Length: 141
Image (cartoon, rainbow, N blue to C red; front, side):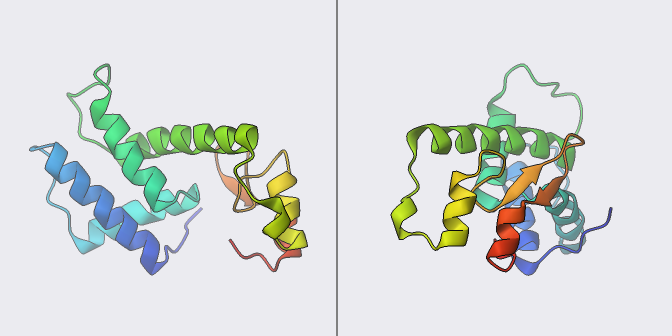
């Protein structure tokens, strides 16, 4: 599945690559083509900038990871997805979302036990799909 990344996704990938380069002296020097390729990988999973950056920090803070290999998009994705899952669980438990201020379609997303706050559902194969709640608000994320 090839996904064309948005400009924001390419910028986020560039930030991720820059963060990796500052944390790892052996990392490849980031360039525009690399940012596009990494953004394509991230876009498949619908990962947001904050989760990706936090994923890089968690990756390099993990003293149990194999440091012998280069960091790949899949490494960042694995950590970013865990951070996203943990955040979504906290949001559901704490109820930080002000449901009264939401439009009915957004309220349905916030109340949905299956999707994240943007209306995404993680499939068993690890890819994301739009929840039917997102269709009620025109598919906006």
